[in-house]
Image 1 (cartoon, rainbow, N blue to C red):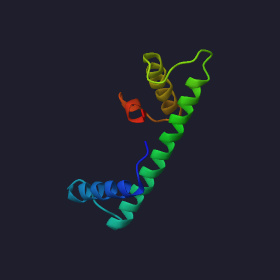
Image 2 (cartoon, rainbow, N blue to C red):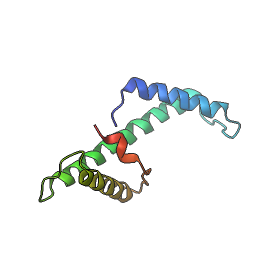
Image 3 (cartoon, rainbow, N blue to C red):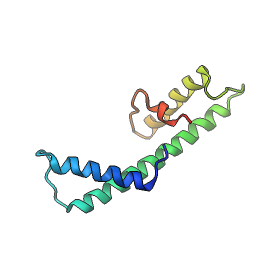
Image 4 (cartoon, rainbow, N blue to C red):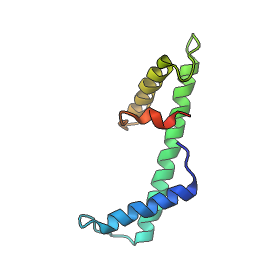
Length: 103
């Protein structure tokens, strides 16, 4: 999923605000360092998801028969291959993860 750097930064501020408001979280670093780490983690995770999406699309297009994007067969293969790629990376996918990558 592609989102702008500005949106990632805004999201990092919101996440940091939630952590600061929580009584269950104790900061060992200053708030801005934590927020910057959140930006890095989100950016890297989204970059990895884009790679997975690209690999999945490549696998689908390499099938012997042409499978049209948006068809039921394409959707089933996308979900299966996406989940397989995430598992290979040691990440569990949410049930509707594929829907964020349609476009």
